[in-house]
Image (tube, rainbow, N blue to C red; front, side, top):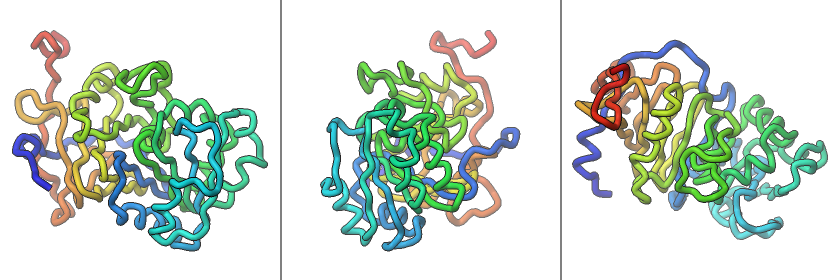
Amino acid sequence: MRQPISFLLVFAAVAIPLPAQDVGPAPGALVIVGGGLRDQAIIERFIELAGGPDAPIVVIPTAGEEDAYDQHWSGLRAFREAGARRLTVLHTRDRKAADTPEFSAPIREARGVWFPGGRQWRLADSYLHTRVHEELRGVLARGGVIGGTSAGATILGSYLVRGDTKGNTIMMGDHEEGFGFLKNVGIDQHLLRRNRQFDLIEVIEKRPELLGIGIDENTAIVVRADSFEVIGQSYVVIFDRERMVGVSGRFYFLAPGDRYNLKTREAFRPATTVRPLEAAVRREWPKRDGSKDGQ
């Protein structure tokens, strides 16, 4: 695809580490997709991390608008085409049901769980702090994989971006807690396709402890422990309150193949295993009136 010059000019990486923190799952893996999933290689990577075509995979489409989903749901087609043979659809809008061992049993046997798109607050309403949420942690604890696209991507972070029930243009709304499989992270999706590359700035300004990760369509990050790799067809954008690019740049871009250390907040190109990319500058962000923080 074409690479806009303005995107490449702001592309940089981080050279100043933060205090150590555990961000991603260990063991286990996450496959977090920015929506518009058409690259079958991303689905194949998810299936591989789950253990291959015969691994039991649970798909939870609750972010969608329908009241009911059955085992013939059309959203399974992409997984079947990628070779998955043991697929189970799991859905409820009843938190009491989600908090029972009977309902959550398929997750207890799963090696992979996938969340399709829709509205992320529906997932929070149905499953946050229920038995389902607990069993999802169990999938990661036994080395499995959890993935999602669009709303199913955002729910995997700790801060729920665009979680307002009144509309998806409200960045910080009436639902602010995600599943927390990435700690101190807010995830946005459809980033460049929907011209959202500036939207996470609002979140990071108000919640400076958060790391913002924006993911474009047909693109994913594959997270293992405290690092991730970018795969797919477009860009991932990093929003870090402690770092700027140039005079006023508040985010920078990672391309497929780039890697990122979530603990130290450093990015690396594929050919670089030790030295980070060009360093982003650690400085105060300007306020909206042009002054800097603390002035």
